[in-house]
Length: 138
Ligand SMILES: [Zn+2]
Image (tube, rainbow, N blue to C red; front, side):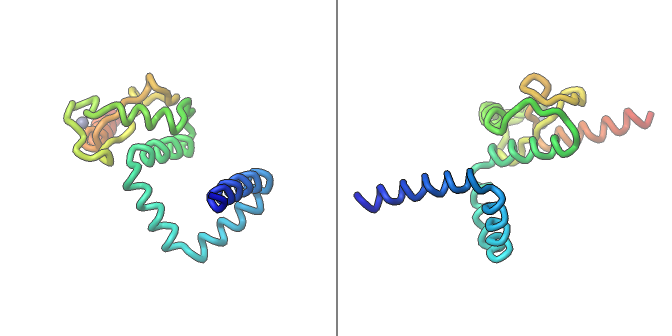
């Protein structure tokens, strides 16, 4: 019982410490990653496989932000959208694997929110890409 309470206290202490010393923690995290790269990657990989929708949501938001889009969605919100959609919103085929889901911006919207995106399969996403490219060239 006492050890359990100590664990909780330790966790709270760690969380507080991380909040108050972000730079220090960033540096030590980076150091840990360098020294244990394989271990960290394997752990992350396991997490990606266990949480495919969350991983997709996180990656999609990060990539769209990197490319200069305005993203009015949190990872939680996008994950909830992805989880709620079992079929491709373009061809209607059920996702046999959550990893086949992709986030599509309707009409190439520059702002990403719940109304400007649809969840489609990677096949439709690739098809849209080529069709758009062809339209631009003609
Ligand atoms: Zn599709």
